[in-house]
Image (cartoon, rainbow, N blue to C red; front, side):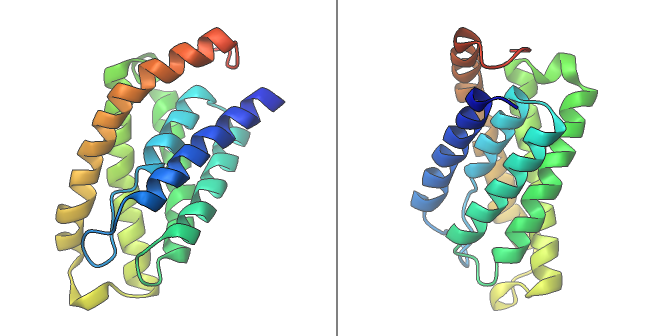
Length: 174
């Protein structure tokens, strides 16, 4: 990995961190995770195992530090690392489609659903869900709307970011 790629990924994670911190918690401290959209963008722009591992770990750590979910630190770290590699595998399997706006948006929605499911399962097993709320209630009220929001965000951000990175000659495939 070169310095430009590292700096670019750091900028994407930083933007995601700001979005993650400023969006308020909606339901029992759960909030839409816009940091995921930035992680997915980094995975699409820098599709190699080292970059994916790095962005997954860093995104997990920052999400853990900024979470408003009671006891959500460890579930955030678990969720981001698993989700990063699953999304990378999906993007690799569907390489021709994942580099289009529609493909990137679908991948963001699917990745968000995976992330939300892993997070809620980890939280349920490790710390329990707050207030006796069920997995399905949190999934429907937080994860699914966040998946739609991240898909729309990716549809807007992906063409802009890929154009900028192509002009900067940061990535080989964009």
